[in-house]
Length: 383
Image (tube, rainbow, N blue to C red; front, top):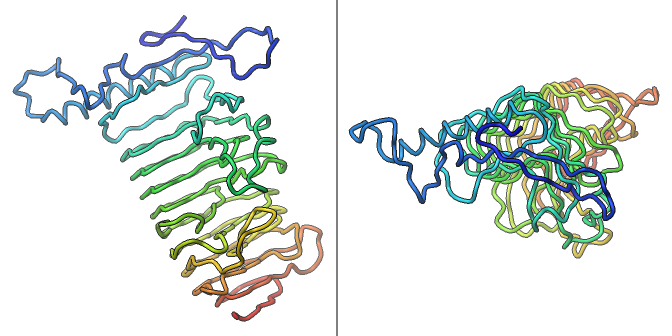
């Protein structure tokens, strides 16, 4: 039976023709059924007299926030598959928390790509201030069926697959104890976000999954992340700078890349990534534990070999320990047009997983400072 304020619907979940299994029954929880109203129709206060000293906007803010919380609570407490529905419109809400634990806190994405619009992602939060998302839930992107359709390694005009969890133009956001598995594309993406804090984030996908970056950060500032992998910079026109990123207290196990900063070669405009700290990170059998790659191009061939125009400076790697599955544990390959400045490696101890004595490093076009390191240095001066 559906909960109060909900309705039932059937989802086919991309089953093949001829599949006679029962459709998935999903309880829909529409925020408007709990009292939310878009800005086009300001809510008329029913609980207070007109003389109540709140402005009309404060009324909308107050009641919409209550409605969102009630809809979330009902969905969270419901058994079985659920969907929280936010109808089209602009809703004014204040700081709000979506917290668990929920019953069966396991969200499974529709597997079929035909169910997603062009350029759409799975779960997206946008233009909200003060959002808190916690509760130990699991987001399963069901990417296995979608990965064969990822052509981005060979085609620069490829169609991007859905991201598991995306945040756009958010401010003062907190996410905690969230697990993302088998995303069709990036697991988590931040675009034009400020003052973002993510802790106790768990991310998992098999080695065969293409472009399943842990966390992609773009045009954002004051970001604090744990258990993460950073995405790429310098591909598009008018990209804003990235600064104030902190990644600490992480464990990375058997990943292709550990701490990775990459910028596109032949970037169309100048930008910078500064004041970034990676600290207290343990690597277990990671292929590229520390890597800066300013010649990034994932395609079979690239139209130009012009140097990246993204300026990297004031980057700190502190207390990085563990094992590397490749001989080169630290690779700093910076732009020959704008060499990296003020790169610090402190207490970096990386051994080979094979048990051999020393891992090595490779450094190009970078002015780096080292202290307390445990790997062999091979430094190439800037051109």
